[in-house]
Image (cartoon, rainbow, N blue to C red):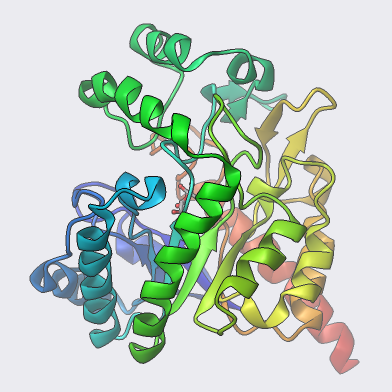
Amino acid sequence: MRMTFRWFGEGNDPVPLAYIKQIPGTEGIVWSLHDIAAGEEWPIERILEVRSQADAAGLHIDVVESVNIHEDIKLGLPSRDQYIENYKNTIRKLGSVGVKVICYNFMPVFDWLRTNLYEELEDGSTALYLEKAKVMNLSPHELVAYFQSNSTFQLPGWEPERLGQLSTTLEAYQAVDEEQLWSNLAYFLEAIIPVAAESGIKMAIHPDDPPYPLFGLPRIITSQQNLRRFLKIVDHPSNGITLCSGSLGANADNDIVSMIHEFSDRIPFAHIRNIRLAENGDFIETSHRTEDGTVNIAGIVKAYYDIGFTGYARPDHGRHIWGEQCRPGYGLYDRGLGIMHLWGLWDGYRYADKGSL
Ligand code: DNO
């Protein structure tokens, strides 16, 4: 397991690279060029700039999260070919500077979704929270109105000034059902996976978060069965998964340990975090400890240990603790604790194996 830490870039992330370097066993940043719009080709100078910042801090840039996919690719519009060309060029450039994994998602319109970014836990810390009924009962139009009137209901990737376009985009998806989305995904993969393979890069799709359809939009990267189908579309090591325990864990039927064993050679990147899922589907993100949530983190780390996992991992999200002012879900403190918990489990299994306990 090679430990990494997500960093949003100079001026965009309050966590200094030097602090990331001080988290034991942490070797690289997980990064992106967050200001480049989906569909645009990434400029090499900007890529090199991040590489030199990371180099100076003694961290690598092997994992990019994400190179986002233009909506026209997901919708299967004729304009997708140009966006796919741009995507291929970005893959080539990232390969040329030594990037090994690109994480991305194929969720229509929305990335991860929560109804409160600062829900309070029993200990007074706060964390990301989804109240399921609130989102399941909204029509697309109510959703737009809700966003316009409620600043705690967050839409990643949709700045308030772009909300006006949301209705049009939602409208365009009326023509895209699950099978159509699978076919648009296949078209994209068949075009880009050969380029990733030539560039020494493994593409790693992120599961849908939460892993079920919302607002009448299809979501397909949701379950073991669907991940199996995904991997067969292009059966090549460069077509892989970002196995995210928190996203998949929002459906109690998902057996993540079983997925790790089944897809062992196709997981270049692991997101490991816990959530506490209620029977009605609401969930709150918790500390990484198994006891604090409903995701079997100890079993998951054991499964990675047992398959001899050599891919990259990150603690994914954390709570907001000790008064830290940080990006929602992305503080230093709780993610640092998360890393230590993951290493604690890993080392426990390792030392027990060596018989040196
Ligand atoms: C949330 C992240 C996701 C992820 C994208 C990948 O914190 O795990 O936003 O980066 O879905 O494209």
